[in-house]
Image (cartoon, rainbow, N blue to C red; front, top):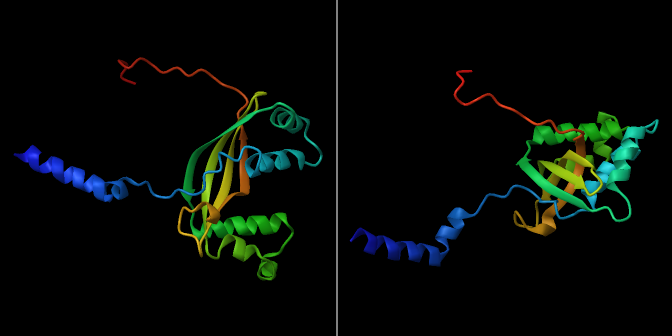
Length: 183
C-alpha cells in the first residue's frame, strides 16, 4: 500500500520540477578552468615576469608554462564567496600596488570594481603544463549584479585578482602508521 502511494507521488515531484529545484546546487562563482590561455595563465606569467631583478628560477617556471606545443590543464579546486571586508582588503592591496593612497581611492574606479554591486569569490586553481609546471593559484573572480540573474555567464568575470601562487616543486610519498596502532 505504501509503495503504491509513494511511487506516483515521487514521479509527480520529478515531473513537476520540484525535485530538480531541490537538488540544484548553490551558485559558487565563475568556473574559469576552461579559459586555459586567458586570465588564469596570464596572471601567473605576468607575476613570474614582473620580478625585479628577474628571478632565474621564476623564468624557468615561465618557460615550462608558455611556449610552442605546451598544453595546459586547469582545475578549479574550490570557490567561496568572500565578505565585503575581505573585498575591501583586496581593493586596498590593489591601490597600494598601483601607488594610490587610501585617501585618493574615491577618485578612481576601484570602489566600483571591488565593492559596488559585485560578489567576489576566492578560488583555488591547479595549473599543470605538459612541461612539468605545477602550481596552485589563489584567484578572486567576481559576479556582477544588475541586469543578470545569479549564475548567468554574462555577469561573470574570471581571475580579476591574483593574490598567491604556490609552486608545487616536489612530491613526497606519504606513509601512515598501521591502523592497529594506538597512536
